[in-house]
Image 1 (cartoon, rainbow, N blue to C red):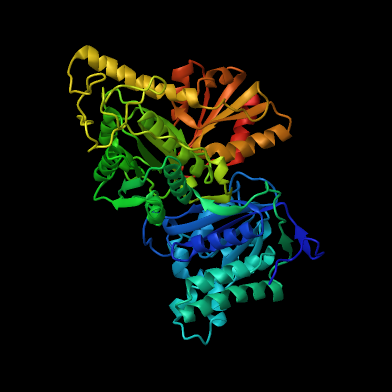
Image 2 (tube, rainbow, N blue to C red):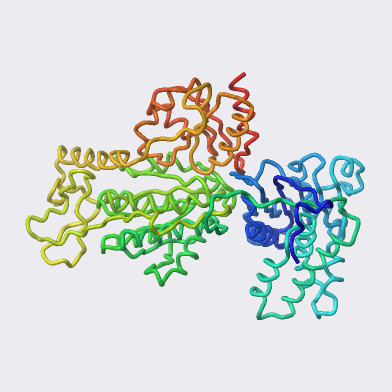
Length: 616
């Protein structure tokens, strides 16, 4: 079955659509969203996704805090976010309706599974009366009420499934309906079902029947008043794949290790939402990747430091409070001046906080959160696909300057997805690494005149024996030394080395006018929402521009000059204004901080409204 052609007079062509699937964590909303995403990617749409799921592993069914959601935006133009508000909401139960209805656009398509709206379900969602009986709901939205439970049981009848097993297929029935409404083909999902359930013929057939039944309901019933199509996007020529941030980090680390011809040792402790990086890296054993699941965060980072001492590329990853646990060992890596990449997939905090929700609140910790004068370069990825390039850059910094490097992503990037153009091998620049092998006049803390990096000598190399550890070293010789003036000199050298990394940055780019009334300055995952807001502002003729900072420490040397070309600087960030504090401190200029700490990313409209307020 193929998608309807946009030229079909019965099909209305749209530029883009935002869909949100919502239900219990066991309703398969993440799976449903991922399948719609894969199908839209295969059709050539640009897209962006936002999975949102509860922290509890098995949240109580029907509870408000147990709602799982997946929002995706597919478009015929270049997009940067999963959308401000959904055009379509699929609500599997009352709790999903209550938690998500306020976001649905007026007049939007609302599909409700009436099979889960009994008295018990309504009570769990704290409804005093059935909201589907409220005439205002049908007046405000295009309401489609359908018992997906009954329709699914009928679709899989005769396969010998229990009622519970049958109802697990209702997400595919809902998916089939939306495939019809938005002219999506079934083939991509059918092939996935064949592969996923190939060893379980009964469940393979049940899911296929549910998917096709949903499509048939859309095609042959009168519950949907219209059908739509979204043409392919005009993307830059090349080979694309759909990618999420965590696998992109894993691939970037493997690519970086290949470019510098060093094996990866990934020592880590599983923690949400960074755990998937370990899962993906474990699949790259054929690329010389060694993964080690340690008993705690401290063991994870210390094992990675040990691997770097032996001449491997030591990498560790974490989220939330795991970063705090690694801070002591980060000081050890700074003192020993060994390369190390630390990936911090930020999440809501403090403490356990909001482990499945996104936040950007680890910036100040990453820059300064260690004892003593302990400088570490910090950079941040701006999109799921950019996680690949940011990981390569982190590897380059670590081995070039013999230093630990902190790479910041967050839960929004880790689990979000976008089309990603596969790079050509010739686009990937080699990262030169030279191990010291000559014992003549060897000094373990002599320094490269340009990078100030100390020589990297593999243990066991004859004549290159040297002391290593957390105690202060004598300049050049590396012997343990407590002389106060030597300590001050070594502190200065380590800082000078890290700050000198800014000499390798490209020029800071500004999107929009080079000078004007308002510059929206951002970092990390706020990139997409800021770009969307600035594009709308420029279309409206407003004097607004965007600047996005990848290298957060040391800051770019030309950033201060860029900021001073604008009357006002607006900094949206998912924390209480951490970059704003850094900018004020470093450049002695006033900025407008725009904080958000809701466990949810910015929308473009939020930023645009704040820009308009600044412009008066």
